[in-house]
Image (cartoon, rainbow, N blue to C red):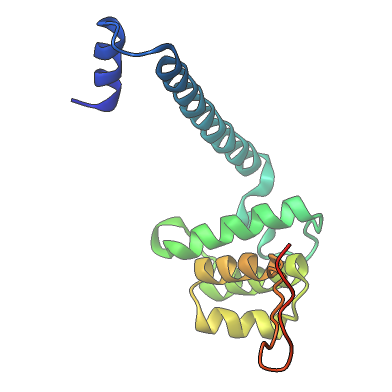
Length: 157
C-alpha cells in the first residue's frame, strides 16, 4: 500500500491523532503547491517560447535582449537544446552557433570573460558548466581558525 492509502485508512479508522492529520494535510498542500509551480513554470516557458523567445529567432542575430531574465531564459533554452542536440536543434543551425550564443550569454550573465567560459565549456558539459557557474556565485562560509600552538583559543561564546 502507498503512504496515501495508509494515511486515509488510518484516518478513517480514527487512528490518526489531530497533529498527524494536520501534518498530512500540510504535506498534501505542499505537494499541490509544487505541482502548481511546475505547471506555471511550464506555461511560462511555453509562453516565452511562443512569444519569439525561440532560439532560432535570436541565435543568428546580434540584436538580442540583454536584460537578465531574457538572458537567463536563453541560456536555459540553449543548454536544453545542447543536451539533446539531434532532437531539439533548429534545422539549419549549427552546434557552433548555439555554443557561441551560449558563451556570449553566460559571459554577460555571470560577468566572466568569454575566453574563460569557453574553457569551462571545454572542461564540462553545458549543463555542468551552468551548475559550476551557479555554484561559483554562492558566497563561501566564513570560518575562523586559531593556531592553538601559538595562542590559547578563547572560550567559545
